[in-house]
Image 1 (tube, chains in turn red, purple):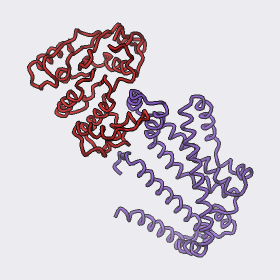
Image 2: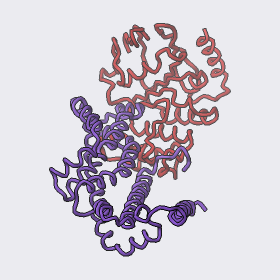
Image 3: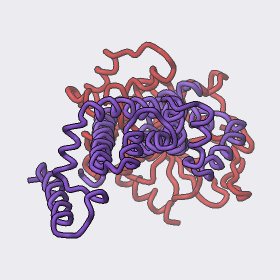
Image 4: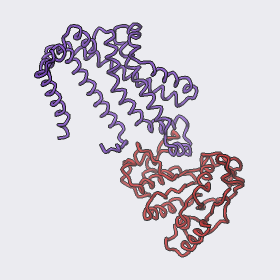
Length: 232
Length: 249
C-alpha cells in the first residue's frame, strides 16, 4: 500500500499511509476507535475508493477478485441454511456450488450436523463460525477481517481465534482488532494506527507460532506494550 | 380456551344483537334479528353462492394483477432512477384521488362485468404493495451488499439473491394490507354498477327492503374477507419461515 489517503466530510482520516503485508503472513492492525481502521480495510477490499494512493500485490496484479472479507457481524442471510450461507459466493457468481467442500468446511469449524440450521437457530459463536467457513469457501489468497470476533464472549472468542489461526494459515491476512490480546495471539506482525491524521507505528513482531497460548510470556509482554502505545 | 375465544366473541355479539332487536323497538326492516338473517342465508343459498363466486373471482383476479403490477413497479422504481423520478409522483398523486370517486368512470368505461371490479381492486391493491416492497428493497442491510460485492456478484445476482429476498417481509406486509382492502375495491365496483356479485345482491335487497338478505350477503362477505386474510397470512408465515416475530406470537 503506497501513499493511501482518505477524507471524510473534508476531514483527512489518513494521508500518505504506506505499509506492506508480507505474503502468507497474519498481520494485526490495532488502533483506537474512529482512527480509520475500517475505512482502510474497506479500501483494500474495494468497497471504498481512496482519495489518493494505490494498492498492489507483490506479483503486480490487482487485488480485485482475490480478497475475502469478514465483517464485524456475521451477516449471514437469515433465509438461507448454514450450508447455503457457506456456498453463498458460488450462488452470487452463478457458479456450481461445491457441496462437499462446503460440508467439509462446516465440519472443520465444528458444525457437522448443523448444515441445515437457519442462522436464527445458531448461537453467536456458531454463526461467526459459519461466517468463517463462508470466508474460507471463497479460497481467496488474501483475507481481510474487521473485528470479526468482537461481539463474542471471551471464552468463545479465544476458541474461535485458535480455529481461525489454524484454518487461515497460508493466507495473507489483515485483521483489524481493538483487542491487544487477540492481536498478540494471532499476528505475525502487529501494526498500530493512531493520531489525526492517522499514522502507523513501527511493526511489532511477536515470537512463536500462532495461535499462541493465552498465558504465553511473549503474548503477555507484547499485550502490555500495546496497551501502553494505544493509551498514549 | 385460546381457540374458543373468537367463537365466544361471536356468540356474545349475536346475543347482544338478538337482545337489541327483541327488547329494543327497532323496526325489522332496519335491523332484522340473527335468526331471520340465518333464515335468509339458508333460503337464498343458491343466489348467495353464485354471487359470492363472482365477488371472489373479482377479488382474486384483483389481488393477482394488483400484486404483480405493484411488485414490478417497486422493482422498476428501485432499479431505475429515471423510473423513480417519473413513476413515484404519479403513484403518490393517484393516491390523492379517492379511488371510490373513480368507480362510476371505470364502470362507464369497462362495463358492468368483471373487468371494472377487477380494475377497482387493482387500484386499491397496487399502492400498498408497491410502497412496502420498494421500501424493503431500498433498505437492504448494507453489510449484506458489501459482502456480495466482495464476492463479485453482478447487479442482477445482487438483486435476485440479496435485495429481493431481504425485502420479502416488507412485501408480505404490503400483501397483507392489499388482501384486507381488496374486497372493498370489488364491492364498491359492484355497488356502482354490476349484474352479479355480493355488492349487487346488497344493493338490490336494500332497494326491495329485504334487509335480512342484505345482512346475509354482508355476513357472507365478512366471512369471505376474514377467510381470505387468514389464508394469506398463514401462507405468508409459512413462506417466510425465517422471519421471527418479535412479539413471540
